[in-house]
Image (tube, rainbow, N blue to C red):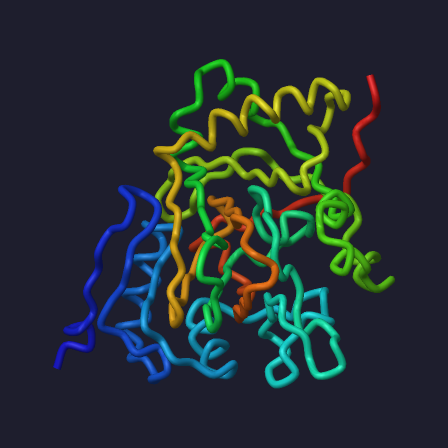
Length: 301
């Protein structure tokens, strides 16, 4: 019997997103099926699986098809059952304490863990409770973004390194999410990453960006670096490079932070929202995995 007989695909965007049907992710996958999904993921940065019913352990087991799972530096957002699973939620427990983080509000274009020297670039998000309106998530294809850059911008970013700082992202969080432990702060000093990477399997070049953590460009003063980054973001986030997802309960999305950014639209903070999240340490032989270095913050002009 062909283990992939039930697996079907439906592109949701020409280059970026694809829906995968015919898989019950709570079941143990045949090795051939897992490899088919891995190959599909090399082509599409975002894979969509609908109508799933998963425990925390099952979300973790599916995520592990692609690599070891990492425990978030925000241990206060971790699942009490499976610590590799994080809770993205505005819900509170019986003592009115938040049960997760990033509960509501808008989140601008970003790439998870860009502020880490060796970021874990795989991500899974699974929807359990959703507001009736808003809260949609969008992704941008940074391969298509690089290919579409004007020649002068391609020349300007080639060989350049961005400086990424977690304190910038913290400043943009809602008040309750800004406080972090001293251990988490120690693990997140400023780092630099190349602004252009090459995918090890496809050979496609891709930008590496994060508007919520990038504070400048190495070798450029703050004003010049900020101006160049603004031009790059404007060119990269053109509508044709973007896939926007309207969540349904039971949706599980898998994405590659190595060549995508994503953002969340705001929604009514009085509405309930609960998502389960995992972070995957990907193989640099199969994925773009930035290998950064410690960095100094950019100097003023």
